[in-house]
Every structure is written in structure tokens, then in C-alpha cells.
Image (tube, rainbow, N blue to C red; front, side, top):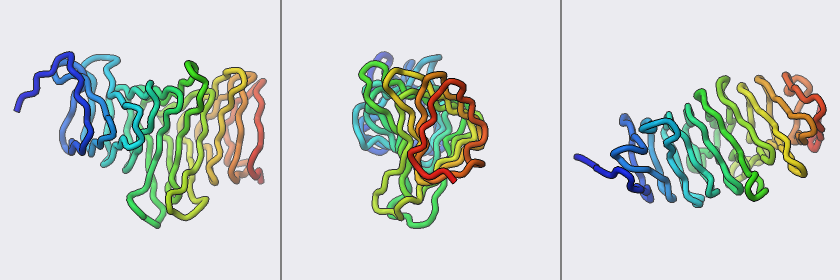
Length: 238
């Protein structure tokens, strides 16, 4: 079948099974957005540099089945994107104020469940326009690993657990990539999952505030570059 939609907006409000196929946003297929819908599997490319899958201000947006995104993700209007089965991101995901990434487990899955945010992309928490916090949420029973070639950066970010009927305090965050804590006056970057471990690099800008929560040991901190920054312990530092 043929879809000719140059310049049009295509909004997914249902379940789009993209498994084994490639969606191109921009160009002749139109500009695509998630509006409370789900994309399962497959690959999302941009027709040209800067083309993005847009997410509306909705808390039911979901990418599942290990989606590969070779385009940008635009959360500039806020809202939430839920991730199931990991995400490979080779573009830039830009989250405006009150925008969240939420890594979930399947249903009432009680066993430990691992997800990977992989690829060579960047997640940018940009709340400079309204000063509201962004968050990266991890559901209990889930271990989220940031891949070695991935960068996460921002100035007013909360990385924390969110319990939705799971075993409390079992969410874990593992960084194998780069976290860049930027400075905006009166804002802070908080890492507060019950368990976390840094196996990559954390760069904290001078005069930025970086809060460490949860339970962690000295070896969990690893490579931390924070000259002139304020590191605040709000959890248990063994």
C-alpha cells in the first residue's frame, strides 16, 4: 500500500506493530508522533537530519519490543514515554519541562527484569524554558543500564524509582556511558534509585549541584569529575 503524506502529521493513538519493518518520519510519509499510542519493535529513521518522532503531552506513550530509533525524539511539550524491552537510540532525545522517561517491567512481572538504553545517542533533559523538573523513572524490579556510547545530560533531573505494585526498593540504575551534570542556578541533578552503580563517567560542571541518594559504596561512584561542584549525600554512603 502507499501512503503519501508529505507535510502532514501522522498521529499514533493505537498500537502500531512495526516488528521487522522501518518507519521513516519526515519526507513523503509525513511527520509522525505518538499521542498515547504504542509502537512495537522495528526501526524508526528520519528522512533527513533533525527529523524526529514527536511525543505529545500524554502519559500513555509506549515503545516496546526493542525499538531502534535512528532519528530524534522530541518531548518538547512534556509528557512521558514508557520503555519496555529496552531502547536503542542513535539520535537525540530532547525532554522539555515535566517530561519523563519511564522504564517499566512487563505486567506484574515479579522477577528481576533488565533493560538497556543503548546506541550512540544522547538524552537531553532541557527544562530551561519553564524550570520544571525532568525525570528518568525506573520501575521496581527493573535494572536499567545506560550503554557505553550513550550520553545523558541536564541540570534539573531526578533519576529515581517508581513503584507500581512491585517489590519495593528493587529498582537499580547502572551507568556505563557518560552523565553530564550541567549548572543552572537553583537547580539540581539527583540520582536517587535505591541501588545505583557508575561504571562509566560522571562529569559535574563547576557550581552545579549533584545529589546522591539510595544506598551506595565508594566503588559505586568510580569516575566522578566534579571540580568546583557541590556533591550532596541524601542517601546512605558506605
